[in-house]
Image (cartoon, rainbow, N blue to C red; front, side):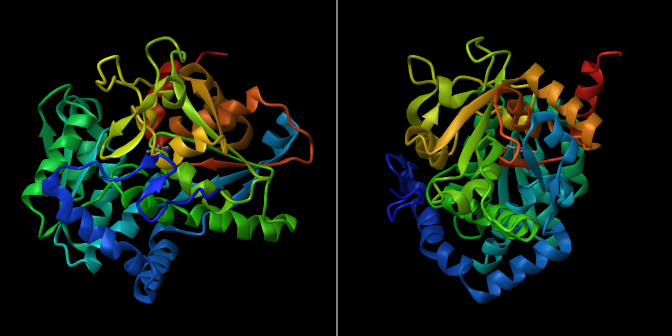
Length: 394
Ligand SMILES: *Cc1c(COP(=O)(O)O)cnc(C)c1O
C-alpha cells in the first residue's frame, strides 16, 4: 500500500480536484509544473538557502529530559516554534512563493481564518516584493486583530469576506472567485495540506523538511533515525504531514495525529473531524469533513484558532481510514493544562495548537527506552491572552 499521492491526485478514495470548470486552467498549470519546479536544482538551492538563512533551519531536535522523566519515555521535541514567524507555516509559504516566481506570477492571493497563514504569506510577499491580497472573514478580522495588523504592516491588503458566516469558508470562496477572475498573473497560496490536487501533495513535500531533519538529527543523537512514535496536532494537517512524511513507509514508527476536541468530542463544540466527520467534498478535495444531515459544513470549535477547521487534508483522511495513523484528541482544558506543564518543566511556551499534541502524553503508557518525537509546531506568544485568562492561582 502506498501512502503517497497517486498519479491522479488521490490517496485511496480521498483527494482529487473538485473544482469549478472555470478553475481548471489554473489548477492544470500548477499540476503540469509543480514537480518539475520542486525537483529543479534552482528551486532546491533557493529553497534550502532561504530555509537556512531566513527561516532558521534546521530547527533543533531537543531531548526534553524533565518531560521524559515525567512520562517514563525518551521524548524529543522538534522545535518548529523556533522558525521565523514562530511556526512551521513559513516552510510552506517560502516554498510556494518560489513556485509562484518560477511560474512568473506577480500577484499572490491567500485566505486565512486565524490569520497565521495570512501572516506567513504576507511575510514571504514582503520578502519577494510581490503584491499580496489576503481574504479573511469579517468576523475573523475582528477576532484576530493583531494578525490583521501584522499583515497590513507587512504590506498585504486584507479583504473582508462578508457573505455567509463571515469566517474561513467564506474567505475561501472569495479567494477562489478572485483566482477564476485573474488566471494569468495570480497565484493562490494555500496554507495546509488541503485544496484540490496538487496542493496537498505540494504542501506535504514542502513541509517534509521537518521529518527529513528529524531522521538526520535522531541518527546523530541516538544512532537510529527511527523513533518509536511521532506525535503531531492536526488542523488541516500540514505540520503533521511534514513530521510524518519520511516515516509513512516505516510501518514500525507509530504516527499519532491529534485533533481538537473543543469542549468534548460529542459536546457539539468540537473540531475532532475524524471522529465526527463523514466523506464529502471540502475546499476542492474529497476528504472527511464535519457536516450536518443536509451535507452543509458545520462550524467547528476549538480554543485554538489554528485547529478550528471543519475538515482534514485527504492524506490524513486516508491515514485515518487505513489506520496507518492513530487519531487521538484533546479538549480545550487538556490542551491548556499541557501548555502550562511544558512551560513549567521545560521553559517552553507552546502554541495552543501544539499543546493538543502534548496533552495526549497523559493518555498513553510508555516504556522508558521508547523514543517519542513530538512536533512542536509553534510558539505560544500569540496565545498569551488565552493563557493568562485561564491561569489558575497557585
Ligand atoms: C496553523 C497551525 C497549526 C494547524 O495547521 P496544520 O496545517 O494542521 O499544521 C498547528 N500549529 C500551529 C502552531 C499553527 O500555527
